[in-house]
Image 1 (cartoon, rainbow, N blue to C red):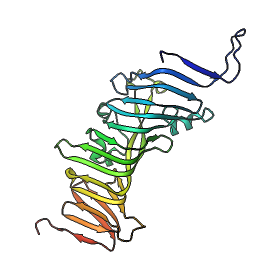
Image 2: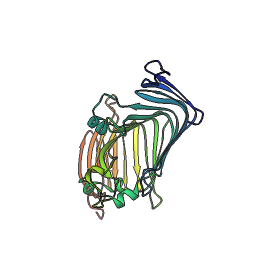
Image 3: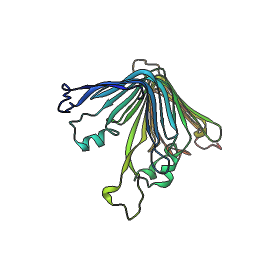
Image 4: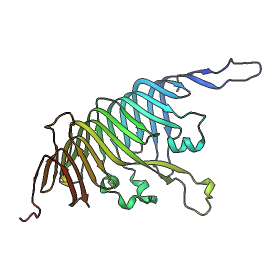
Amino acid sequence: APEGAIVRLDRQLDLRSGQFGKPVGGRLLGKIRIYSPGRADGTGRLLIETSNVQITTRRLWTANEVTVQYDQSYALGSDLIIQLMSANQSKQERESQSWGGVRSIELVKLRELHLQADTKSKRAGTVDSTEATRSPDMTSDVPIKVTCDGPFKIDFYHKQVTFEDRVFLRRLNPDGAEDTLRCERLQMNLIARHDDETSSSEDVTESQKQTTLKLDPHRIMAVGRPAILDSPARFVHVSGHKLSYDLTQQTFNLSSNPQDAKDQVQFRFKTHRVSARKLFAELQDQRRLKRLQAQGPGVYRGLLNPKE
């Protein structure tokens, strides 16, 4: 913060004894730049640029424009709010319920979020026990772009990412087909894992090894009028008042508006088309429909054998 800062202490400054109180708040003036070069392999680079940040012991905030870059991902918006963990909590609680002591990060006004997979980390590091069950959605390095008219929030405490108001998610596949999701509210539940940042050399002791918390998408839940997911590359099109997709199990749960007796969910996968009040579907390797359960009244149309 080249233009300086104003710091508020918990007790009066004593210049004669040189004693300072603990900082309990303040303001960073002018343009603010927070930078971390990341790890030796080039991953983990962090850059945040904004201006006029106000600080207390529990949160940081600014109403000004904000740019956040992490690796190849970035977010553009304004009205940044960062909630901090309490200093009274144990080290174990702070590590398990936060990211570097941060409880949540919110952009009240998000213009664009660009998510790019950390491909270097995936190639170099070992993965956890759930890797074998992950669908191609989670291991793909295809970028995802999200826009919304409302707030965007990462809640490390509850391990959730949420978007509000006219949410539009896009992913351009290598074949040119574009996956899209439109809804009013989008929530992503995350799974925590740790990647080793240091070398596996025998010279590095266990106490010297450092790990970085990684949060991977696990389940996507969307609400809309209706929420619509369209994936031409996977031959999937679904819509409903509430839409839930489990990325590890490749299962869909769809439900209609309980306040509208005529409302129905729609599910289409290759030759299968279903309209119903509620629906559960499980895919197998994204090539076959493994299981389908629907609560009517409704309609099924399709070919059990594509040749018949």
